[in-house]
Length: 636
Image (tube, rainbow, N blue to C red; front, side):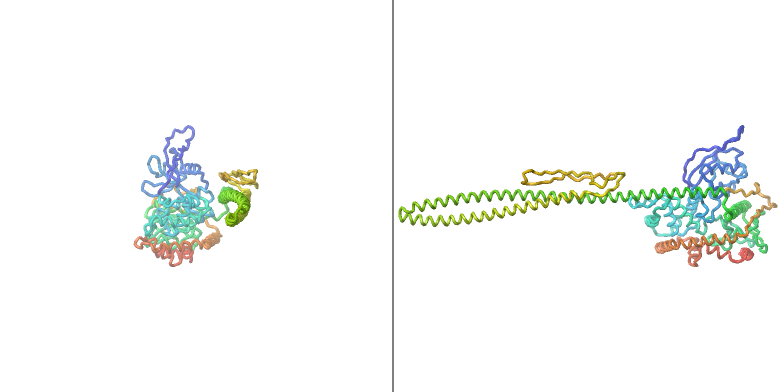
C-alpha cells in the first residue's frame, strides 16, 4: 500500500515515576503520515492507540485500529487490553503498525462527523480501489478520479490547466487502463470533463462525494474470509456493517445468502468450527468452518465490533457524539460563511477586472477618436493656410491687373490726342486704339475672372474655417466624454468626476487667424472504534468454546427498513449521475479489449444486464425466514 511519508516528531509514552523500563521504538503509519513513538514493556495497546489518536486529532476512534502482520504472516489487530510487547507483534526495530479503518459506517454522509475521519476513510478507500481490493467498474473509476482531482487541486481552471498535468497521478486502477485501447491523454480528457463539473466543491465535499459513491460498490467495507460449510463447499464469508454475507468461491461480488445483525443472537467458535445462533428459535444454528483458528478469532472480533456499532447507530447519540456533531455543524457553518465571503470577494474582483478591461477598451476608443480628431484638425489647418495663401496671391494679381488697366486707358487717351496730327497717324492710332481697346477688353475680362476667382477663394476660406470649427467641437466633445462612473480596481476607487486628468494642451492664438489643439496622450491608472470485545487474551484450546451474546432491539427491523428507504431515496436523486455513467460507458465500449476483461468485469456486466445492484441483491436475498436461508447455505 502506498503511503505518503511524512515524518512526525518522536513521541514518547512516559513511564511511571521511578520506572527503569527499557524503551522500544514504534512506527505507526497512517494513510498520509508516519508517526514515531517510544513505548516500554508495560505499554498497553490502548495507551498506544490513544496516543496515536491524540497526535492526529481524531475523536471518532471506534472505527479504527492498529494493524500488523504476526509471526505466521497473518493480518492481526492490536488488542487494547493487552500489553503491546506481549502480543505477536513483529520483532523489528522500530515495530511497524498500520493505523487503518477496522469498521465501516453504513452511511458515510450521516455518520462521519470529523473532517480527519472523513479524510482517512477517503484515502483508505481510494487506495483499496486503486489496488483493486475493491472492484470498481471503469466508468465509475473515471468519476471517482475526478472527485480525487477536485479534492487535491481544487477548481478546474482552464487558464492554468496544462495537458498532461494528471499523467503522473495514480487515478485509475491498472485493470481499467489495461482493458481499453486508450492513451493516457484520452483518459485525462474524460477525467477533466467531469472535474470541470465539480466547480466550487471544497476538498471535504469532494471527498464525501467520493465516499458516497464508493459505498455503493459491491465490495466496499467487506472483510472476506475463506470458509467451508458442512458439505465442505469452498465459500467466502463477508463481514460488514450490516451483517454476514455468504459468497460462492468464484464470485465475491454477488452474495448468495445474508444474515443481518438484527437476526443474530449469539456467535461462538470452537477450534475451526464457527457457530452463529439466530434470534429465531425455530431456526437451526448457522455453522461454518475456517481453515485456521486464528481466522475464527479475527472473524469473532470483527463480528463483535460491527454488531456493537450496528446497535449504537440505532440508539440516541451519546453526549460526546452530540458535542462532536454540534462542533462539526459550527465548523461547517463557519467554513460556509468564509467560502461565501471569499466567493463574493472573488466575484467583486472579477467584476472589477471586467470593468477595468471595459474602461481600458473605452479609453483606447477615446484615444483613437482624439487621435483622429487631431489629425483632421491638422489637415484643416493646412487647408486653411493654403487657401489663405492662394487668396493673397489672387488679390495681388487683381491689383496688378487694375494697375495695368489704368495704364492702358491713359495710353489710349494719349494716343487719341496725338492721332489727330495726320490722317495716316490717325488711322494708325485708330487701328492701335482698336487694338488697345481689344487688349483692354481682354484685360478687363481677365480682371473680372480674377475677381470671380478671388470671391471663390474667399468662399472656400469661409468653408475651411467652418470645417475647422466643427473639428474643434468634435475634439471638445471627445474630451468631455471622459466623465465616467465610479469603479473599484485593486483597492482604488474613483468618484463620479472625471478620471485622472488627460494630458491636454491648447494653443489658442489671439489674432484668430488659426486655431489648434494638441493632446499629449490619454493615460489612466488601472493597476491594481475504540472497541474492546473482551475476548480471552489467549488463544483458546481445542476443547474451549468462545462465544459472544449479541443483544437485539425490538424495533431493529423497522430502523433497518428506514435506513434502506433513505438509501433508495438517495439512489433516486442520483439518476442523473447514473445517466452520465451510462453515456461514458457507451462512449468507451468500442475501445474495450475483450481479452483483457477479468472475471469480476464479466460478473458485474451480468448483474447490470439483470438490472441488479448491490442493494437490490441484498433486498432479494433477505427474503424468506432465517431458517430457510440457513437451509439454503447448508445446501451450497
